[in-house]
Amino acid sequence: MAGDSATIFALASGAGRGAVALLRISGAESFAIIQKLAGRVPPARRLAVRPLYNAAGELLDRAVVVWLPGPGSYTGEDAAELHVHGGPAVVRVVTDALLRAGCRAAEPGEFSRRAFLNGRMDLLEAEGVADLVAAETEGQRKQALRQVAGEASRRLAEWAGRLRRVLAWQEALIDFPDEDLPEEVGGQLTSEVATLRAEIELAAAESRSGVRIRDGLVFAVAGAPNVGKSSLVNALAGRDVAIVAPSPGTTRDALEVPVELGGVSVTLVDTAGLRDTFDPVEAEGVRRARMRAATADLVVQVVDATALPEGPPMEGALLLANKVDLAAPPVGALGVSALTGVGLDLVRKVLAAEAVRLTGVGGSAVLSRARHIGALAEAAEALGRFESVQLPELRGEELRLAMRGLGRITGAVDVEDVLDTVFGAFCIGK
Image (cartoon, rainbow, N blue to C red; front, side, top):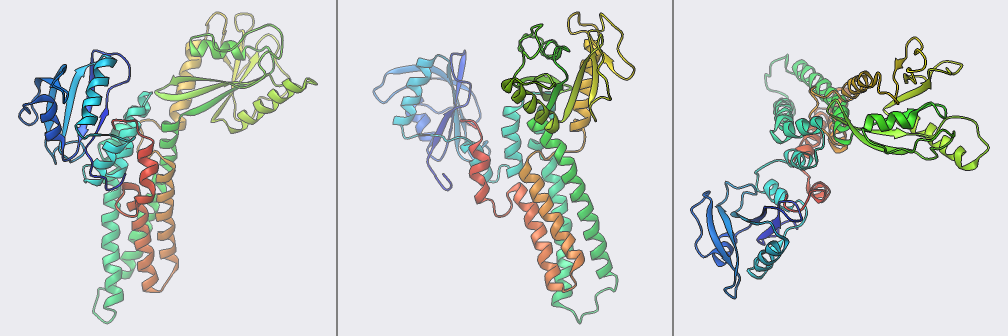
């Protein structure tokens, strides 16, 4: 796909029937193709209603046509849009006409990839576009918007600029060792590199919260059989997703339910009741429940307020006493009745607060992918090596490696190996 100069098109609106369907076109032949279908091309960046015809002169639809000459388009190329009626039959015949006129169907992410290659956005902003399209929660939407707006790119550019200045001084020490450079240059270099390293390491730590916002959290609902775990999950989800029965051991496998808490995507995991059992199937469910609890971002331990268990609660777990319509909750536990709804609003607020705390929604984290964290770590490690070596040439090389690590995030250097991975996850039409 890289370097392909073909004119491409894609359905940018959702599949299926709708009032209007949007077909995007990009490439050098955009003007000629619109001319073939619509006859007269409207003035640049003005919407006009035009009849669309196929090569045989058959009327296909009356559509709103927009001509977008490059470089001021999304992709930086000549581009156009056709707003046609949204019936599947209309979309099908217009698509066929575009193919016959010389267009090629776009691959996933190809529009955004061309925008990146033509300098309309950097790689980080392009990933933000994909995250914005996929956003399901308020936290994901806000984080993706900050990335699309270039907030993280500007931060990286500021670091890169400071690194370039440090590298320039380091190169001067290498190339002109006998010149009368200020005595404090070496100390300033070391101090600035240490500051940069601390800032980058802090950003990498904060970005783990960004990954959690993008990927979501997992809250495991654990406890003994028949304490009301499934009833609580159903109440929090607002629908019956877990089977509720009076007999113990009903839940054998982990049931995952997506919810939004505090603007964060959270998967509630209803687990098997924790108890000793000789039933091999239930025993496997208990093993899986313990495993999910061990790897979850938060464990919600549910107990029965009418029959409190002996021993301390699970370490680090949020203790929640169910059935408070029948008995008072113990000290230190949240009280709730999954049956009547008493205390449910408070439980939601507490869980939402935990989700916000774990992700840092609204904080300074704007990087959101594992590759970002890896590149930041690479840059910080190179700066750490700079501080430990003495040979000026090696110090200069470590600075260049640090700059390369930052550049890989935005696509400034060495990006061909990650382009397919980044843009392959996009939807068609973006």
